[in-house]
Length: 171
Image 1 (cartoon, one colour):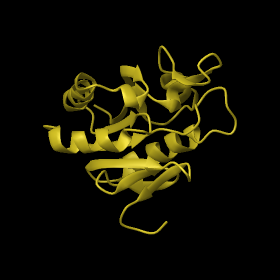
Image 2 (tube, one colour):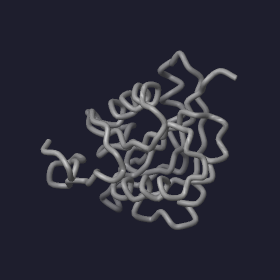
Image 3 (cartoon, rainbow, N blue to C red):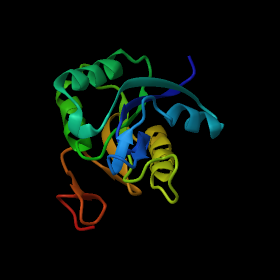
Image 4 (cartoon, rainbow, N blue to C red):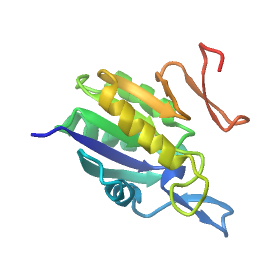
């Protein structure tokens, strides 16, 4: 079996649209990530699993278990999880503690601006950066945002800066 990248989608801003009535970004009913990735004509095959489509602040314990099970049950060793940025570090830490199979490279990514309908958006950059990193990083769980790779234990969202930072390092 040729190596594939398995995308697991959970919603978040990366997979949202602007709702004028609510005056905020709202997750799409279904993910736009598969169509976007397929349009890139990558050299590797990709598989797509939609676990949920939620603002990450609304992810439940059952959703976390479903994300964990989707990764454990995946036959693929290269996984990219698209996720909302508010609780992305929490979900990464949950997986680190609860995954049964530790033999995969798992990248979390998301964006501060939706992938579709906004320009500029950090979404396409973060997806491309994650594809590159999932192919080169060793087994483990990582978060790829803003052109940087973070470990789940170090990452924090710095809302005032609109990006993530490490609790261990200066910029």
